[in-house]
Length: 288
Image (tube, rainbow, N blue to C red):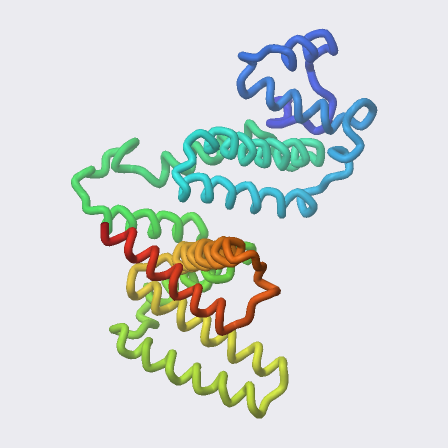
């Protein structure tokens, strides 16, 4: 009988001496990291916190680490990126160790599966397809292959629930657009934004909180649709707006500090004026 494709038990094949040597090896690479995680999860000698973790308890950290990678890239913080990528890789190792202990999968089967998927989705590199294709055609081929892999399914199936809401909205809209359910231009989207804005005002004045939440969600969904039509990443746009707000408000704090004051000793009129000053200073620097 062939051996199972991955460990069915958390026991490791290395002796303790071999394990200690691998853990201590600064050039141990991927085997070293896998061994460290296995040791952390060891029921008898591991870390109590690590032993208690589950897929569900680790998932928020996985999402957080992915955002920290994106943040380092956005800030061009290349000295930080290596560490952030390592933290994200650790999340994959963590999940695969839990999967191996449960007899579900292992790091090896995960890497084998993604390797097979990448080969299958790039027939123009690893197969006989013509490489002389536009980026748009390659994207269309990628989506066609993905649809084949999924098999018979509804149009919107497979768009992950755990995605950030704005990103998921765009993905849902893109799926629907592929089958013709889409406005032909931004004009109709802008008209819909005006309509949804009016409905939100009406909800604020006359409807319940639950109905206000629903109308607010509708408005954000249409805003995501406008971003898609304009080829704008709404998550990136909102992150930039957040950073701009933080930068300008901190400038308000700095100016107030020069006056011997703090924000809670100021008022809206003064801070609004300082906001305009901070905005003008930024525009002045950008024009130089």
